[in-house]
Length: 269
Length: 242
Image (cartoon, rainbow over all chains, first blue to last red; front, top):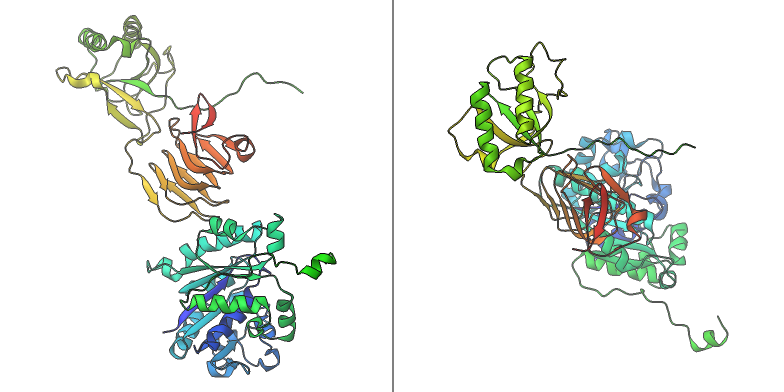
């Protein structure tokens, strides 16, 4: 049985797809057979971030409607062993997802994979609810600003009331907080919420803090998950997060303002 | 712009209900007198509602007026009366006292302490607490109340975690929050003016007791982010330390 992980946030543009791609890739790099499903039907993005947009023939909705088999629709990642992607349909909308259809696809994938990462669309409507309904684990992606925190709080409420685990009275979904686009300097200046503030409001365990990094945009445009960029702080932070998800204890890093070197200070850089 | 010097407001009061099951003027009056003598302070100027819903016979307007006079002489202040829908007297519109609608079934009655003596079953004096439930068990929540969630308790509501902004907690009784209160809290929603709100950190968007409320703007002027309790002091919301 695979573990179903939903990457969700409520708010858009906080880094759900970037995080889904990075975490899915990270799990595969650690030897776990992983599939990432794009639930954002109509606004297909995951394939771009993963750099496989040219290889999309069949999609998630085709599989649900029985127009294609899973093996036809699954795209094997060329860089990372053990990793495949199930892209969303660009021409349909969220109503194309039926609960029975989604369950069938997840059951099928569950037989052959260790982890299923569900990349949720923004919002709290049908698409997002479908992505989180069958989840065992939720990674709530949050930016350190008030509206993102508020939306994350709302999605946590939905996880606890509208998921399968909640409806059937099973153990609750395991919740993790992933703080992205973190800017230590702006936190120090009081322009951004700090890690402690967000943790206090949301009251769920922290999986990781991803610093704001130019490497993320660059990686997205190149279609490479940022976790593969071992030179970037964001890539390393995602790697830490994946290891924490797998149960390893790793200290947080990149939370402090980098100290300027002697010459930089001298030159006022 | 005109200035208003008054407000019409709804209010729920606790009062004495005199429930008469059989009307025999002389025995009834002496029995009531006996009761009043047992606790004169309790009955002094006490507002009384005369309840004829359980009356097993009809009563004339003259008899009713004499009853009023007797009650006034005993120091009681009749403020209204009610009768059952099936047994309405024909003088219903001529009574000098306002008629009140029959009690809702939800109202809770408490046997008053003067009703210990069972010798006279014709007169039952009850203290009626309208629109208020007593001795409801409390609801305990251990998880944070998230934005968009709403929790309601028929008795007291006890939250061992925080209430997020955009969440709403309501209770017929008091609300206890052992974390930060950042959302809206409404205690005594069925009119219990004695209900209170307690929290470890006051950061609420709105607090309300029995329909009287204040917003965070007002809350921020005192005890903000500190332990606080909220109570109703003569229609004014008061926020103070424990």
